[in-house]
Image (cartoon, rainbow, N blue to C red):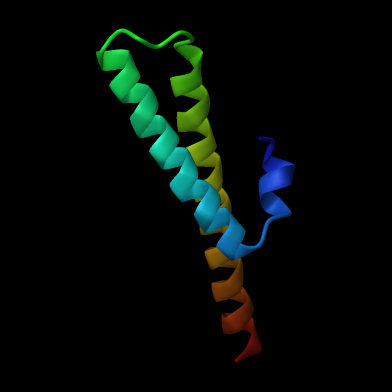
Length: 72
C-alpha cells in the first residue's frame, strides 16, 4: 500500500493494519523456512509496510506532542 493511503487512515485502522502486516510477515517467514515461499520479494514488501506504518504513527505522535506544547 502507498504511504498516502496509510496517511488517510485513522489511528485505529492504522493499528489494525500494522497487526495484520506483522501477522503476514510471520507467515511469510515460516513459509520461507520450510521452502514453500513462491515470491521472496513478499517478505521485503511486508517489512517495508511495517516500517511505513510505524513511521506514520511516530509522526502523528510527534505532531500531537508539538501541538500540545504550542497550546500551553
